[in-house]
Image 1 (cartoon, one colour):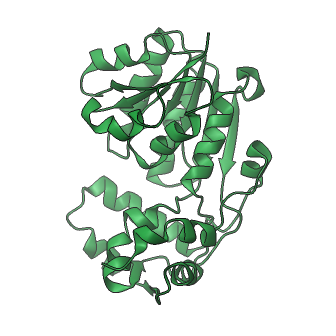
Image 2: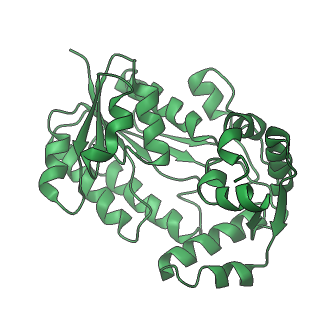
Length: 292
């Protein structure tokens, strides 16, 4: 009998790639989504992908999603209550007798003094470790795909992107590599990765100028990076909730000060191939960066 793997947040940037990476690996993939109507693309991937309603505000859907599950890829949303949601999901996993939890955390979750978002990630990590469940923690660096999610409009419309990170170098990772690691961990014996914490980065730390050069080469247009002062970034975030503004400004300072200029070999060690470079990412997503 094959394993049944629940993937939470299955339509999101990372989890949707985890579903894709698990499809065809001989497991039943239960794709947890707030609304099953939003999971048509996931359902089309493989007959073994089964969308299931998973609404954190409705506890009955949470427990139902976990019932009969062997393994879980657990992602908590970027919200002010993400620690509470993480604990809710871990409790459901324990009540269902799940055999393995693979938790998506963040690079530097245990760093001191650390950032607010680091502290939140670490709180969920600690709760999971204390739950008694076999677990593996993945701590990825910043996502390459965020250039598409958060900067895509300005790249398409203005041939530029704006960040308050100066000349800082960042160890961005392609989410497809996170997904490949997660799928490997979720389809090998639990004991092989039990109680491990894996910090995942791209192959090199790159500056925003290098990102702009990669996007320019991929699109055939001149894409520029515009460094903005922190004050301007803070002003642009005035409509955001306080917790979000604080989290993002802390992250920008970390990047600007080369706090993410290091890399690890972990991705290549776990999936037996190098992680995607920023150049390869730009090439693979060039149509999504096309001028509009």
